[in-house]
Length: 134
Length: 205
Image (cartoon, rainbow over all chains, first blue to last red; front, side, top):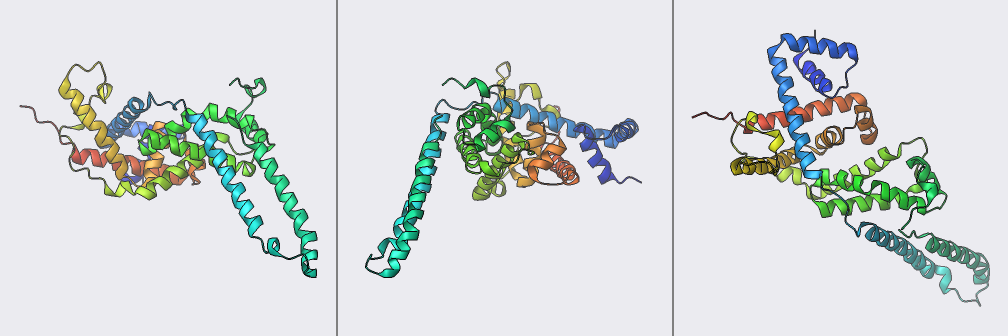
């Protein structure tokens, strides 16, 4: 036997046209014979129409402002610059940046770190080139 | 700026692939196709135009930032809606507005008194009293929606205002079809109860 809660859930799905044909027919048949469920169906339908109409009126003139794309472009640039400056900080704060060349260890470090830093710089340059122009 | 011809007939999903290959013109095309949609989407959550523009831009920035994570089998509109929805819900959490709204001062009159066609001060409304009632009603609908939990508010917005199917809503929200069906039913029921409690029938003189 179908419970009332389950019936109400089916009514809601019927309103959204989300019931299989067979179930939809059964619920429609029930609505014809049950005043209580029919009243519920009508109330929900009215709420739906009310919300729909309210939203339609409130959003019909919504359009992005003229400066939208320009501001978006600026924000993307700012994001990229933030990323780049944090990468720059990482590079300058790296312990290898303060190593003295007289230390034999540092010679090894320079041979490994410097090419890596050059690689970072190349990637950074590539990132700058990638900033979109909207 | 004139659009490159090649992008006019290309699908959204293909545009994302172009973007992944480093062609930023594809991003421009995505923005021009979806900027109005995204602002309207956010507006339906926050009901503040400037904030909606801000959040929608944040959505595009996120899309650009995580462009390499996009997979071709995902529908683009679902991905964009998901990003925007999460940003709007973050905004909700920041404000927690849905918890602080009072709805005691609802206008009197039964739900039957509501003239849907004249809602929100339609210019063709000749009756100032009806116009005032409609304007006030619009404000109350907004407040009532804000009293719903973010999840219920989201399903109502996606279903009633955007007309998404249960399957699409499930994809956007990362839930099962059954969960979506239950949430929509509960959200509708809560709206109905809140309206029924606060709109008493009109007494005829």
